[in-house]
Length: 317
Image 1 (cartoon, rainbow, N blue to C red):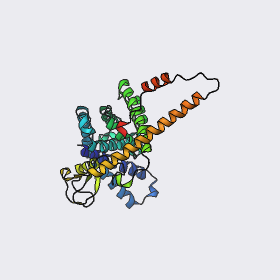
Image 2 (image 1 turned 30 degrees about the vertical axis):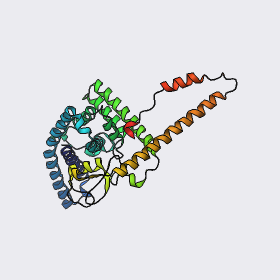
Image 3 (image 1 turned 90 degrees about the horizontal axis):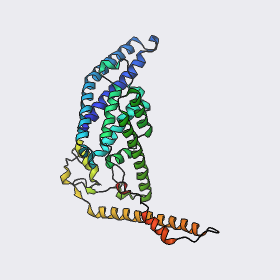
Image 4 (image 1 turned 135 degrees about the horizontal axis):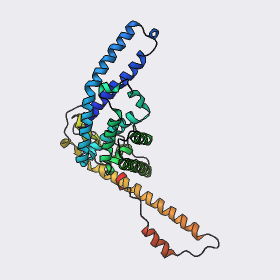
């Protein structure tokens, strides 16, 4: 179903971008275009208008169905092999409708195509809200380096406020989701910084991220993260490196490399803990060295340190 939503949105938006461009060109002074050029563009416009009409109804129905499925089965859409593709697709289309390029979808008389931008934007936002309690979804959105932009989320909020298509309660939840994703992004970037430079052999060859569960592809003998190859096989059931047919059951766990990656992550955590301890020690030394200060109650400080909550970066390592 994710493939269906991606396809119909892409087809519809491509048609509207073409219509927007052609209508602008045909609106120029008659002398700008020759009769032949004008006829060619009018024919192209008619073709894109027919395409937009045929796809828009299907797009509306598919997105509404997708909204219902994500509400009923949120766990199914936040599985490791799906969640990043889902987040990328949502971010891309949210940016298309509420980002800087939204003007490209503006066409004359959108009603004739069944195109209602604000209600469609509302449905896409509902999918986000259906998955608002899933940390894996927060992380996937935060890791979308192509289309995730905080200002686009705020623009979508502004549109819903003006059109009253989302209730005040829903918009409050939307604002909290924006904040959660922002915090998640900061934590993920900090976790990546703590890891330092990742050895090339630990990186996924397609995503260039640290592998969590490396597997070997049986024919190309390429090592890749399990979630990456599983996601690839959902739409293209072949080894991406040699195009030989492949099933997920055929991949071979690379246990030796996985152990090396776990060791690398553990050493990074130890370095981070050591750095925090050193910072705390320096702060304590400064406090103790203040002129005229009272002697520090070591037991009290230790007790307060135990009560201080450590940041939970478990989901972002």
